Image (cartoon, rainbow, N blue to C red; front, side, top):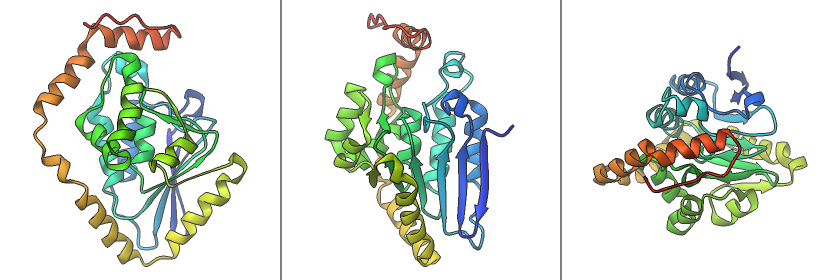
Length: 251
């Protein structure tokens, strides 16, 4: 059974995370299917793509069992997010529940995020001994600025959707009962706009924010890799899977 479902209705293409029983945690198969969903050029009638998720959780991030077994790493996540970010037409995330770590990044790499007030967002990597790659961290700086990025990365706490909207990280938050109507209003507005204008404007925005790609960061990459190989990372992932508090030792 596909863990990512893709369908089209008129000008709207819908991509659905369909692993609700596992909180839509991203395994290697899902990452590959998501990348493939955004690889082809848009169809002639397409105007906007929507990402939704089945179940109560939007996306719990990378499947920690795959991360612990080193079956999937940051490169696969980055490839998937890069495909979404560079997609020629607008992408709207409709977030009904928690979006954590890789799930948070998945939402923030979309052009618009419409979220239920019941949703929470966060980068909890510091709580399990990991750190985000340069590519993932720079997205937070782009959308949140230094203050918001520090709050999300260094504290590692889940932020309510309303706080995300206050920080300017997401487009809109509404009561859960009004999520579909609010999302449809954004989707319909985008679908009614001129497609060549949308493509030109999205390309402009992506290019204008790509300057950080050229900043030297090999030393930062080394620190991130060191954290990922550490005993603390192994302890943090094990503690999360075993539902207990981790005991970090700084090694």
